[in-house]
Image 1 (tube, rainbow, N blue to C red):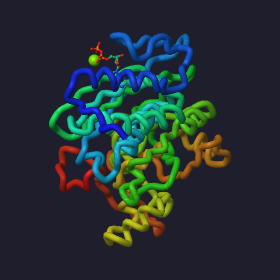
Image 2 (image 1 turned 180 degrees about the horizontal axis):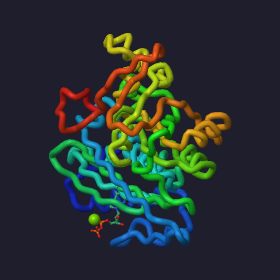
Image 3 (image 1 turned 180 degrees about the vertical axis):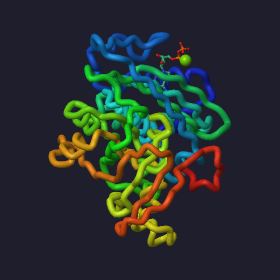
Image 4 (image 1 turned 45 degrees about the vertical axis):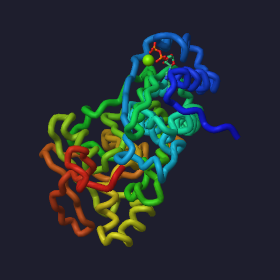
Length: 328
Ligand code: ADP
Ligand code: MG
């Protein structure tokens, strides 16, 4: 086997971009007029659709550990977390741009590994890779994916539409995503969101990236400083949260409330709508009723005996520093 090309020569950047271009990653959507290879990509949108745009940066040592996780897993996560943001608006993902700062030493090898992960997710979710930016430096890997999507004819579902009396639903069990590396393998709920949105009027929606308590908190804030009561016995707890609880002694329910990166959806609808959805969930969505929206601000946890106590949003916050949680 030939030694891997060093990334220190300028030609390697273009060689790498050529290699990426030849992979023809994605669904080759008819609206993709120009992908990689010009100064900008050109995309057509369905008539009447609105453009959804989101971006997320992942840094070695913060959101992943390149050494342990490998570049393919990093690529999968980088694409997955962005697709999840499009799902959270009930949009259809369409096209991605990938900007990388590659460690100079093994840059090409890392880039090709990243691409395998990015491409696997792009293909599954109908995303065309239409461009990016490639840099190398003497620092750790940083990857930023920018994802473009479009709304359906029903428009986007935002965070700000919850009302007192509404019901809070989630699409799957929560907690412990760091355990076994599940945080590296997001399963964006795109089809679930589209099916829910096609069937029912959704008042508000968010993907659970920072933890249910924090992400529901965002909905409450954006909806005009409302509150919510969560039913302790109704929160679906992931088996990873149980394993995590056994290992660290923190109750599994706390993991379900505060751990992040489950990438399930938190959906708020009118009570009658929620009852209909729960009785007959539109495939492939699974739904769990976890609580209700109230007019008074604050987040409350109600026990099965009816007593309730105030809880804090304790999900992940980058500015709280490294003690706020393990490297993610
Ligand atoms: P420019 O200097 O005009 O920005 P570049 O040489 O940076 O052009 O990029 C050439 C083409 O390759 C562009 O279409 C750009 O979007 C694409 N590209 C660069 N890096 C990547 C990457 N890592 N993944 C996908 N496309 C890339
Ligand atoms: Mg460029």
